[in-house]
Image 1: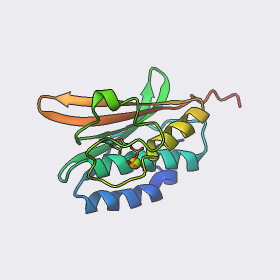
Image 2 (image 1 turned 60 degrees about the horizontal axis):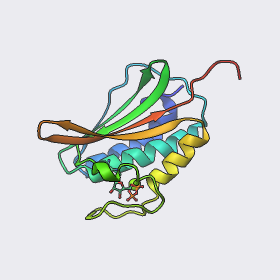
Image 3 (image 1 turned 135 degrees about the vertical axis):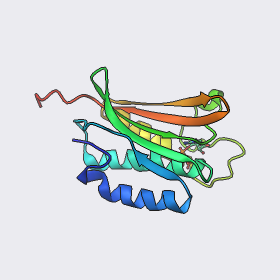
Length: 154
Ligand SMILES: Nc1ncnc2c1ncn2[C@@H]1O[C@H](COP(=O)(O)OP(=O)(O)O)[C@@H](O)[C@H]1O
Ligand SMILES: [Mg+2]
């Protein structure tokens, strides 16, 4: 069972909410349902930490980061969205490469986070995608992790 507010994810989320607070980011959980996924909790934690860490660090002060877990057409998904600058469209495919970092990045990092996320998620048979959000002059990034559904047979 995976819910950003549920027991397994509470301790990493506490650390992340302190990080959000320090960066003056409003971190919220918008899930209404639990999802049942067939992946080890520590791996979910690593994926969540990397995506939320990026969302907090690349979003300017006063921004918002939302976590959501739910089902889309029967597929369990976890979504991390932010109100930061997003990623140039032509670089969206490359940010998953090891050590790749976008040009003009004022934030420090190794460029490994998203490559670790993709390796983990794909090792479960799931997938991860990034999508820029545009709404008038507002920008943002949405990261969506699709988990393999729990069939109840294993
Ligand atoms: N939420 C985000 N908003 C804007 N840019 C992002 C976001 N997440 C990742 N990026 C871009 O993708 C690059 C790769 O991310 P990642 O693999 O986590 O490495 P790192 O964060 O160490 O640079 C980052 O350097 C940044 O340019
Ligand atoms: Mg990162």
